[in-house]
Image (cartoon, rainbow, N blue to C red):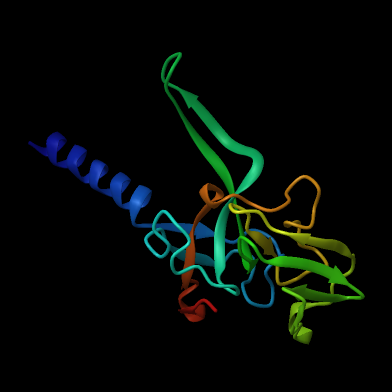
Length: 180
């Protein structure tokens, strides 16, 4: 009896983690001052569904890092489980938007996006680009140290690379807050 209850609990947790919510640890300083190294986030996988509904510029999202996997476990020739390396960034441009970084400023659809001092200056330019139908542009708030969509080995992300929306810092308890 105990083994079957444990198995049901495991399946329930796996389903919740896969389809509803996930807990993610912040590693590094690319999102400081908004998020700090070693904070723990609650991430909603239901916030966006399968499409772009609900996605807004300024959201903090968890993404699969292009070309990096934490591990792959093979279950045979046709079945494997891959755990992607995740990273946390701010969604700044959506499909069809234009994006450009010039003169230390960020422009989305030709309009300058305010760059509060706490977010750091933008150290390098990025040429004007219009995003395709399934392209999303993400950057870190600490733009001096962030490895994000501006990098040649990252670039714009496809929708399937966006895991979910960070909604709350849950640890340390003294830092409990809504993510904005």
